[in-house]
Length: 198
Image 1 (cartoon, helix red, strand yellow):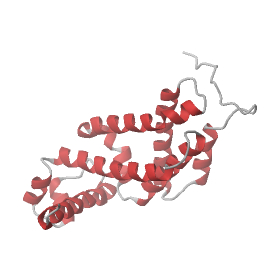
Image 2: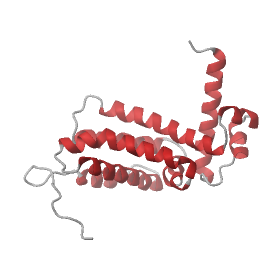
Image 3: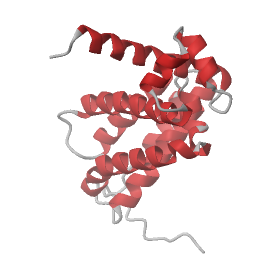
């Protein structure tokens, strides 16, 4: 059973994370300091350090919390769908819509790669995403479903960055994504027999 003190602590932590997301949008991650975060959140510096060990720990927490929420929304969007193209497109749509709805996501997606503290969290999240969608590529008959899933994950993230730069949903980008999953004219998925020249 959660006590009122635990609830207050959770709300304060969420308030600090939300402040970080707002600031990430305005300042970027590189300029995101503890002083800026506590000023934005309206909390004491000691409160920040009660919830997060340091700035790096805070950035990892923000990244994890956003992606935990995002994964929950994606799983809800694909619930009941069989593995395959429709499920992949539903997951991609949920991801893109969520990125547009949340502040500071551009900084998390674009700049986080350069933050050493977040590197491991990004790698783990990409592994989870690839694991989630590999059965979709297997169901579509891809010869290398795990590799296809990893590449698709990168395409969807890039699509999110393009939409965030435009500040709104871009149907042309979403349609282009869907075209990557089109079956061949004979109704079978592309086996990608041709190879990229080295």
